[in-house]
Length: 276
Image (cartoon, rainbow, N blue to C red):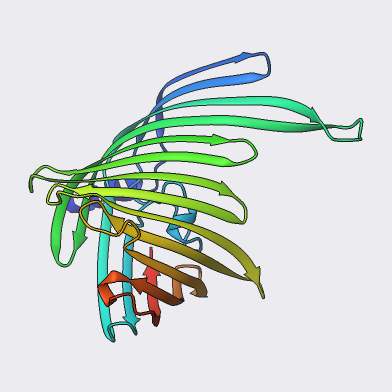
């Protein structure tokens, strides 16, 4: 009976909506100000399975992800299985939405525009199973997102593993205007004495009702030269097999890296994914 009750509680939490414990709203001169404090309850979040992570400002971990892939660069087949359980956490958010109108050139007609500023701080514990190891960590995510003609975003993520005395941090900057996305990430872990940085620009386009992403990126490290340690030009294509949860990802790419003495490498990565 206890197991059945526990199962019902888990199911309810898995699909429960967030509880708002504090809300304050005011409007001044066509500007909306809203402050929210909420409890994040859902263990399983809605995940956009089709859009690659670097096109999303704050990627969300899926509940279950199985992946088998082959990379022709090292002729290696690899498999991975991960499980994320999101435990209840706290979220503080502040939203400013300003409505304004601008006159179009040579026209008397006014064009309505919306300018928004979104700030949030989320503190949430997780349980993760990967490579047959159970890990507990607390994720602190600070997000600033400004949208007008372009979308600008800064996301600071900090992962703390209290039982392993270990931490990871990521600083992500994104500038986005469809179909282009510029992305810069700087990361570091407790075991590293250096920072790893990656910067890239990507263009998404539709061909035959399929999404493709063409991108260029470079990676570097603060403890070694040159500044652009490696360059990568790639094309990502995802083909959905069933219900957007099962898909094949095909990625041909060119790699120009000091690791290979700057000899141009042509390779392809093919993976089969299942997400839930």
